[in-house]
Image (cartoon, rainbow, N blue to C red; front, side, top):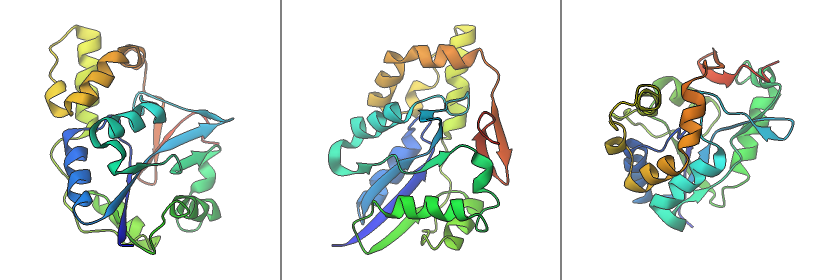
Length: 201
């Protein structure tokens, strides 16, 4: 049956770096992509840091890779998000791990992150992280360029940093960029993880 690769990611948006990571993983593994979601009262919460809905991010992945990778919604935090902390000690955090693994058909699996701190956490959760380096293009820098274009009518500096299909999806959903470009970022960082302020407690 082979080995699965679990890719837990924000994908806000899918960049050329993400495309390269998934393409490389596909050479040796069956790839499962889990875009993170934050849910309160059955609704997904989006912020300036997490502007794109799960459905849009799934469509970004599928526009590039078709059905050659599997995209699932199970990397989902349910409000109150504080119950997932502290990591490892919180029963809710282990529920999240099991929620993700329930989708994996293969008995053997690895996971991917380019972040050293995240790799330590994945190892603690027995998710078998691969050694990897963070790639150049960050989704955060792409978001900044998107918001700059929306607020300053600047140049389209971001489009070369995402696959063409993803650029098309962003342009078709430009109202999302317009909306969040003019808002404060209602996101908080706790123990190295980002959460929407709404629904934290």
